[in-house]
Image 1 (tube, rainbow over the protein chains, first blue to last red):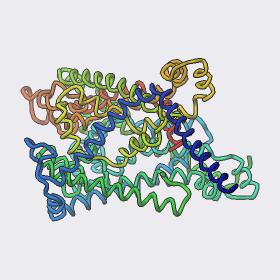
Image 2: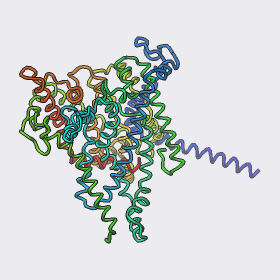
Image 3: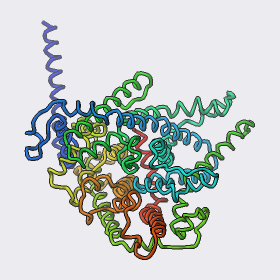
Image 4: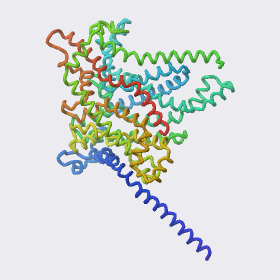
Length: 322
Length: 293
């Protein structure tokens, strides 16, 4: 009998706790109605400009007919994907996209870390500020200006680089029309433009390392290199892991803007990537369904990469995106 | 502080490497500047190295003689001003509610927003949407589709959570302030630095972007500066600017180069002048963003 009463009590207790929580939430919503009004346009924006296109991606599985609209165009299943996988271009653009992405990761990812570690060792604050001011500057150049500068400096007729080559008795190189040069130009110009800016986030992490660790290590007789290796590097490791995940997740997302501007009919063999292909066949060629399929393939691979890298990171280290 | 020999060597090596890197980054920028003020033929012959040779403004003259450049400049100013204002309002409207622990549903809303960072419908569905909405080749297409950036919302939310004292807001609520009043009278006045960061992040983005303009705009009257710049720098289309009538092909080729150097300087002028301020605030923004990635 007593047991029974207890059980009923605990049940009602549970129930009241739940209703209390619910009531409190309802009260919050009522009291904060202004916050919801404020947030509504944002939500509307994301639904219209991000989720509607995600819903619209189903044209990749249909034969889009403009007069019928997205929903009434006939369903064709995986036809466009098959056409893409069988096409002559498939291996070329996959090779280029992956090649540029991996090259960029291998070069563009470690350099800012090394730069930050070096800047962090500089004690002279004037020199330090000068290095930072100069190396951050190219970040603010637009892609158009950046590519314009690349073309000016590498021009076989008037470019500075070829003038230097000629001064040393070499033959001028037509960098922009030579497919074998494309990836290197893309990646190293990206390093030139972005290394300073990308190093900021590591410098911030380095500034957060307790200086007492260094003092203690010095007392124990640890050399300079060992201190960097055993204190600074582990100190910024969480930041490195997070950025590595984000970078790998976008490996196939090789930026359209710069590749497109650097592209010409002669270097196409090395410069045609997924996004430029989508633009050419989709926007210019009006093959909406086919290029939507190519784009969807890209998004899905990126998403899977991101999730798997994040999962691996969660297993082997303590930091991950979520 | 006693230093060992190897440490001193390492320290010298670091200063040397950083000096080389700094020069490598600086020189191309400096070269464009001096080349834009030099006679085109001296640049062609490789005589310009350290300072301008035979001062000349032919590139600037040809550039400003073209009415489209002015038009583009004006358009870009307009897009940047309008776009940045909308960006700012939307970012605050998103970040403030999400920063509040008593905003029921903020977990779901955050998820909805952050998911769009990692997955998107892609170029084609976006294009079809814009077409469907009748926004192609309009002023609004440069403003509304980029109304807010997820990354900046997260930075701003982090700032609101970490830098505005909760007690202050709670005290205001007890005094009978409404949510909007607290936001406008207490939170925003305390958010000066982050608002500056946001204005600069967004404004530079608008100033430099060409992609949306390229796919959505078709009439040249609406083109922003970057699209005209693309024609000059990347596509080499400047027949109207180089004078074909008076002399040889070589001459116009040289003038074309001069126009390019001048164009780079003119477009980046606002940025160059603002750079000292930009740098301070931008760095601050990146730091806040890195606190809670």
